Length: 113
Image (cartoon, rainbow, N blue to C red; front, side, top):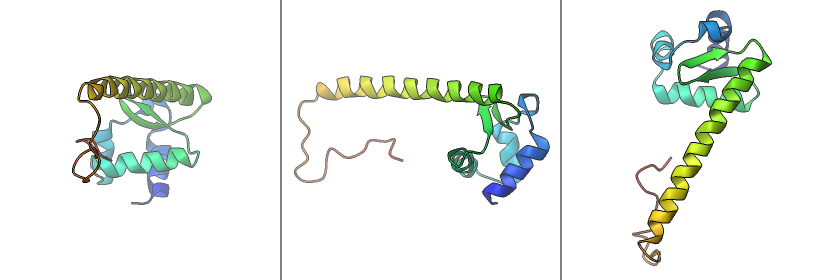
């Protein structure tokens, strides 16, 4: 499925917050994996397409207020991730200096992209 197809589906079936669809519903309806759906939404948002959403799923925004609420939710997620990063940096300090000489340590942990 192409991004344009997902956009057309959201416009036709999920216009406005009142028509929000859960990620699972969209995955089933469009035969997409969680990663495929997430990546498509990300790409479309980066291109300026008004895909709104939150913990309840996704929808095609009908006004600036719906986009603003989505932006605020994403900003909150970023702040939460930054707190996690800061905590892990503090935890890492207790291990002492990182050994990066042989390439076997200092690499990404379990959450590599």
